[in-house]
Length: 432
Ligand code: GAP
Image (cartoon, rainbow, N blue to C red; front, side, top):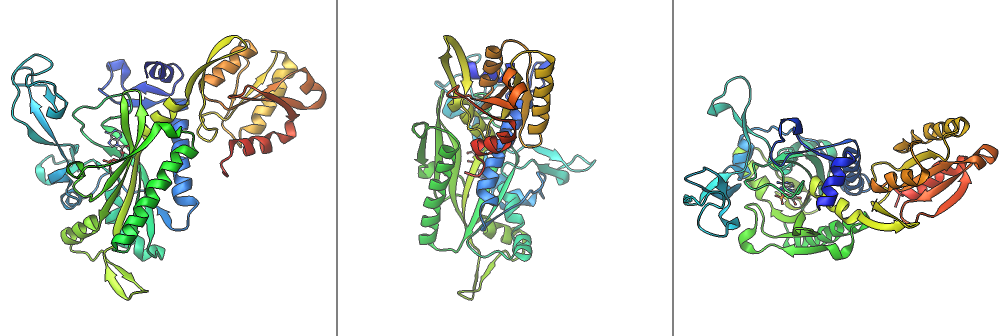
């Protein structure tokens, strides 16, 4: 993990946030390579969950929502962690994470546990009083439930159907940590799948989504032995759930949740109907009945998933007697898809390489590097997971061919410049 955190800093994947002011506990910024990786992960999810299906649509709801939302959703009352205060140094802790009965910082006496709401509060408009208090959303899901009628009225949706959303969520976690695993500001990829209120259908769709989501991680490169399913015990279920299974990854600090698949039933639509007084039911034309659908929800965290992809991809090996660090990221996720390198810094090779770079750039995120030996340049690309390097050499000047090097095998093949776009498109493989 330390090696990965150092690599992330050194190569511009993830930086500590507000670093010039000493950082802000457990907040992180994505650098030029991190932002590409993150976008690719969200793209991989969106394509699979929305664009390649005909039963799921997308939504992008506001982070700030009417405060009644959080009364209705139960978050105001239930979205809490137990917390104890040290009477001497005032530090706060989760009692379940303490070894003894005294403060781990100063040995002071601790208060009795009390409930601490995890939602960030702020004010809407210029008046800062309780009637203007609003919350930063702790999950994206509620934006979907409050739009249920809008979606039904405008989209000709027939059950079963899903609504997917990617966006920021905020939780004032008492104990954030483990790099980008647990932070107070993070991004979620959530999908609410609405089904008829029927236990058999619920069981079938729940199994379907657990299986579907597990396979998504494997498809994009995580080793199956580093993944496991963990059903929640009754006492750890979220207030809205009557059954949850987590997809966990074997992090260096132990197994940790990447995503939860939850049976939310009609809890959210029931509560929003009650609190808003609006009819949030669905008319089933087949059975000629009206009801509030049930929900099966796969909900993943982008930042944690990104960390898992990085950890799983990180490896060290030896090529031509030289040790190298290589990120074996799936080409679809890799921040840079191809690097163009002139073998020698001769003006004709440089000119040709820049022309090839310009040709590839409209299709792929393309890097260009002419600094240092070719071996060092390959290693620089390996370390950030660039799956392909195109090298321009003396033969290119004669027959317009280049070498294409594969990051993982380091094998090189020769092919015409004119074939590059097709070859790279096939190898990157978004169509798979
Ligand atoms: N709508 C359901 C929901 O929010 P959750 O299990 O609380 O369920 C879903 O959150 C996912 O969001 C988690 O599996 C995790 O990947 C991510 N997540 C939750 N809290 C997080 C935090 N403090 N930091 C980073 N990711 C977090």
